[in-house]
Image (cartoon, rainbow, N blue to C red):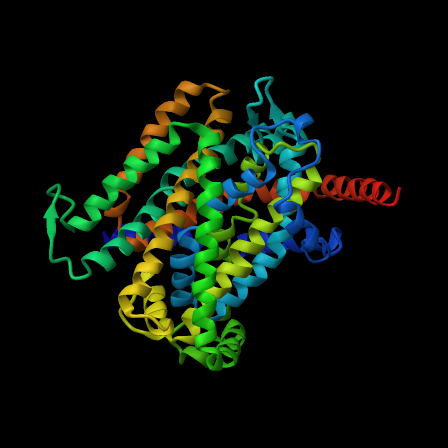
Length: 476
């Protein structure tokens, strides 16, 4: 197993090396400059439109409302990355990883805006309202048919990310760890399922069975059922999680200034904070950017697949709505999680891994009994990860639909394979799970970022035209 982990780590470091980080950050920086800091200037308007459906939406083509499309995208982004991923990044890259996560998210807002805009502009909507769009179509239709190979490459990696990365193993592993940590932390009630798997707590086995059943029940209903479930769970659980983390921060308010200083100092000189335990600034950047992309998926090309299903006639409007996803996911939720981990000192406690780090922060930072704090975190993680599993099934199914030329038989077979992957997820090791997820994340981002560079002029033109029309209509 150690040989496999070493091999995966080597591949991960190669994929998530300096070139890819530069590609993603440079893409976000380019779009930020060309759009004139749109993520700052238009954020209030984006937040307003986030909860307000488009006027005359009846005439717009698509399957679900803009808010439902956002919730579907958020269902895929607000997950273990916000709770476990932040803890993993801070543990491996030091508190400075949080700083680079926020920086990447700021530029990522411009990236996410562009993805949403292009998804609606180049989508294909059938007569029955069935929508298909995303990087594979804005590569093929925006860059030209000769680039179809790049579109297919993206779609292939998209299927892999769903099946082996963000969609299944990492989410289910996070759920199983949280449930096991709360109900049977010492693994006193264990069972040996198969000879080569070893012993696992009954809490893990039961959780995987219940989860697989619930996932199957929702996925069979398609995008509309996924969207309806996401519209209920995502806002509710996000608000609950944010409220409790804000309580944690308020209860430790005197530690906040020192925590912020630690985060900023560690971003540029990790050894000054960690005493040499964590490596260089490049490591902090790498972990921060990688986990940030894992969490908010800006540049990855996944969210535009959901955006393409929105009932809207205006690509720019949907782009703005999509942009709020990165703001909510990383700049709000991940920042609060990271701050709670740093100010409680959870990242310095030896022997803690993944969700255990955030659990420690909740237990020691909240003014409640440890059992209550653990239960709150477990509940949030379970629901966050559950919706992420649903969202990524939708993404990977759309990628497969494009790859197979619309053959829905292949999609239905894939759906059951996906459910099987959900079931076996808890029996994967933590380090291997996150490394596999990182690798496919990086591979998926490359074709999408190439398309965003090439089509940045289209994004700028569409944006200028829309706001010219919008301002003229406002002053009539």
